Image (cartoon, rainbow over all chains, first blue to last red):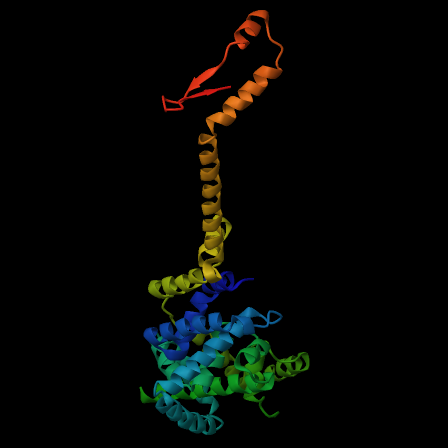
Length: 180
Length: 163
């Protein structure tokens, strides 16, 4: 397959998904557009490095994720990352101490009409890596082995990271529910 | 009472990523543990909540830009490919070769035209006379052939040539 037809296929098949993924990661339309544009540019530039024995999808999303991480590093979002890292530590240590009845409270909160906004806020406060695995797992419905290929880590790490991401999300939602 | 299952196992179970042995363990445990059933319900609800987050569609300007990028690297086909090859490829060799071939053809054509128009009249007449001398003559023609043939060249001093 030549570069042009592959790129056309990538636009047709993955354009929407790429934008969704980028939007989930950035939480911002303009940044998501930049990330997607840069991703396609890098795909074009590195086309000769693509190993056609591997799924194109994995390679593509892996590039997208790298573009986003580069963007985060270069765009002074490290502030965001460090805040998240602190959040992650505290959420995870607090998480194990959560009583079961709090799960019920979060379930109640998720039932409410305004829960979509609360989930959006909570997702925005997750670390980049947690947002990435949750997006790939829940939105893209990728199996763990495929996520591992995209992220470049072992399946076991994906499994624990997905769990930690959900735990952090749960803790953030609980905090939001308690503030109300 | 048995200890509750690890959250990581429940998370993998909800994603259908637990091993068959783990699945059996979870199912057995869930039958007796209200806390883990609730935790599993919450995980399922969280998964749905993440999935159902609204996402704006791919912006039209971005789509157009990406499609433009794809078109810009498209390889031409058919005649377009030939002309692009001829005009764009290294050194434009093909276009120079075509121009040289065309110029050569014109030169040959011009030379042939020129040689056709300048055959000397002497050569033509000599050929004609040669033809006339070798052909068998009729009686009347024999009489005529005894007469001298004169051809005028426009009245120069020598003005006349006799064949």
